[in-house]
Structures are given as structure tokens and as C-alpha cells.
Image 1 (cartoon, rainbow, N blue to C red):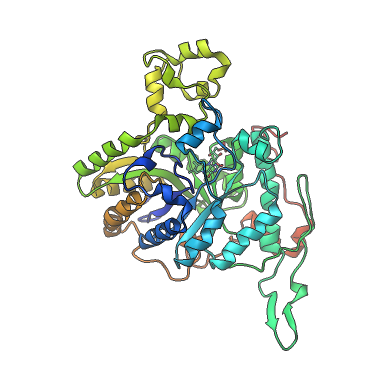
Image 2 (image 1 turned 30 degrees about the vertical axis):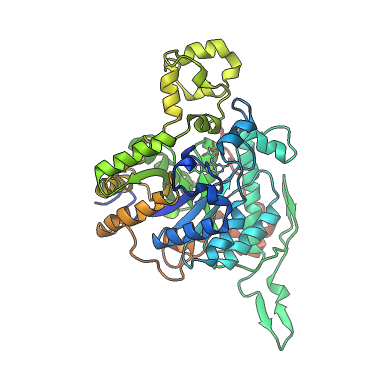
Length: 480
Ligand SMILES: Cc1cc2nc3c(=O)[nH]c(=O)nc-3n(C[C@H](O)[C@H](O)[C@H](O)COP(=O)(O)O)c2cc1C
């Protein structure tokens, strides 16, 4: 079958979705016997999971991150602390060298926010990782969403949503200047006889003077194999999609149905063309929940078992619920709760329909086992579902959500991957020495293609001509 994007039989890209905490998105399951999540603060945990992902020939381990606490529910941060909802958490960039040292092919996607820390230091840290891993890193560009994070970095409140993307646009432009424009490939000559380590004629400052940042340069790190790490982004808003169309190479796309997802993908590809990119310059991933076992019956039993540990309170904390819905009669409607609680109902009003009951809303918020990209079943049924996601929805891959570390990844690797391989839907080996970008886009694509906006700074003259601002002429985007 030919997919809408034209590939004969698309092969699945897989990242293992991780975060250095006990409760990332599936809350409460850290208590399940045998779950290793509480070991996230041990180096051995990361070494073990990286080796497991490499055994499964995964594209990468993808690390989420937040820089504030979920403090809106009940007794604020205390609830998040008790439930382990993304706190305590460790800095994901620091985990990469440990995992890279015990693997040779696995990639690493790392989340970092453009809103709080200046670009120069981040450019250096990320380039360091790309140099040391020989081109195995990607960056998940986020603008952050917690008000508590803003307060950690000296702000009273969050910067308005669309303005964050404008800042992110200048931020990434600086990174392109540093990563792509500041150093020529052959700048390091290491000529002992001539007593020259780096040829100064091949290194230049960037002298960026913009709206939000001023960065002189030169970049402190010599070019890595990819120069710019693979650019990941997750978004659903018009501003975010515009940003993705311009910059992202891998997009986590939203949508509840095949039709939604296909439409969102098609629109993003079309917008990318408006920026001079090709429709297939972007890969699309979804976050998938997969629970499998040798037989259908065992898979359903495993699902039931996981359900027993799931924490509704954790889900409410993560959703930044301002009201504890559990205190209401399950048969009461959301409309009636809103009337009684008024403004205190906060963001929950946007999540639910007024006619829904509290019981229904609670189930909705605490459900980890539904939706187009969830399946609990035998390896055969899982593989059928994945083939449909690839062909019918036009996605390219998944971020595999973990319920149990390391069983979720192990089950997928031992049971589903052989089935996908037999169907020609999954690699049977890594291509030795390939970069993460080549794994996603093919041989010869270690670096951004020339048509990507970041590539313009390969011409040093471009360092003196500002890039067009994001959203230029876009009336739907709220510029400040
Ligand atoms: C798969 C996935 C992973 C995400 N990981 C993070 C993350 O680690 N840190 C973060 O601040 N936001 C993360 N987000 C949230 C997005 O960055 C973004 O805020 C969200 O998708 C809403 O998009 P918008 O900001 O364009 O409205 C993630 C979203 C998805 C779908």
C-alpha cells in the first residue's frame, strides 16, 4: 500500500518517551512492583534503558522537561511532590553523556525551553553533545507552559503564548548563526609545524543585535557532524504550527481521529512549502500507548493490572486542575459545578462539555488507555494498528509512552518489533555511523538541507542581513 506521502511501505520511527522523574505522564504506576521508575536518579537506570533502546534499534530516547512545578491543584506543590508529578526531576541534558557512553548508535532528543535561559550558553551545551555523540542529538524546542516556571526565572507571570513563539524565533535564529555560520568546516587545522590550531580566517563573530537578544560570538564549539541538532517540536496552536512549518524537522502532531491528524499534517506540510521547504522535510510523530503480551488475554490482563495503580490525583495535578473534581457527586453535571465554583473552576471549564457529568469528566482526565494511538493487544493486533497509523493517518513514527520501566520497552522490543520486521515495517539493523538526521531523512542528510532557514548562514554575508520575522503578514497570530 502506498501512503499519502508516497512511500511504498513506510518503516516506523520509534523514540522511547522518557523524563527524569517517577511520574511523567502516566501517574501512580511507579508503585507497581518491578517498576524501575524510582531509579531515575541512578546512573545505572539511564545506562540500562539506553542499552535496551539500542537493542530495540530505536531511533532515540526522547527526554521531556519542565522547569517549574504543577502547583494549581489542591495544596499546590505539596500535591505534586506527594504524587511525584514531574518533581523531583533531573536536567535531561546531563543524562545524555552517560547514555551515549554505553551505546554507539542510539539517538537522544532533549527538551529545552527558549523562554528562560539565554541562547549562547545553550548553543554551546547542545553543540558539545553533538560533538561528543558524533551527531546523535536532537532538540525538542518548547516555549514552556507553567506559570511557576516563569517565577523561577524572575518573571511575575508567563510571557503571552504567541509572544513566546516570537522570542523562540529570534532564539533559534541566533543558534543557526552560531551553529551554521560562525565556523567553517575546516577551521580547525591542528597544524603542529605552523603552530596553528584554528585558522582565524575561518571563524567569525555573529554580532546579533535583535529585539530580545544581543550575541557577539564567535561560537565556542567547532562544527559538529550535524551542526544544528535535529529540530523536534510539539504543538497544536496556530502560532506553534507556523513555527513548526518554518523550523521543525520532526513534529508531534495532535488530533483525535485519522481525518484530524491527516489534515494537520497536510496543513503543516503546506505551510512548510511557503517557507521554501519541501513537504517531506518534516517527519510526523504521535505519542503512542502500547501494552502488549504474547496473547490477547495476557495483554488485557496487563492493562487491568496497570489500571489498578493509576492515580487520578496525579492526572488532576498534571492537568493543573484548580478544583478537586473528586469532591463532587459523580452524577452532578460540569455546568452545575461551574455555577457553584465560578472562576475557581479555572481551566477545567475549557476541558469539559457543560453537560458532562463529574464522573465522566474524572474518567476522561484519568484515562491513559483510549484514543486512536492507544492499543492493548497481541503483537499481531498491535502491528496491524501501527500499519494503519502509518498508512491511513500518514504519520512516520511514535514516541512510545512508558507504563512500566522497563517492561513497556522490553515487551515492545521482544514482541512487536519482530512482527513489524517480518512485515517490512521496521529496520533490521542500524546503518553504522549514521547521524540522527540521517536515520530520519536518509543517507547524505547529516545536516540541514540548503532550503532550511537555518542553512542561510552558511553564507557569512547572511549574518549581516536579518531574517524575516515569523508571522509576517499573519493576521491570525497575536503579535504583541
Ligand atoms: C509529545 C509531546 C511532548 C511534549 N513535551 C514537552 C516537554 O517536555 N516540555 C514542555 O514544556 N512541553 C512539552 N510539550 C508541550 C508542547 O511544548 C506545547 O506546549 C503543547 O503541545 C501546546 O502547543 P502550543 O504551545 O503551540 O499551544 C509536549 C507536547 C507533546 C505533544
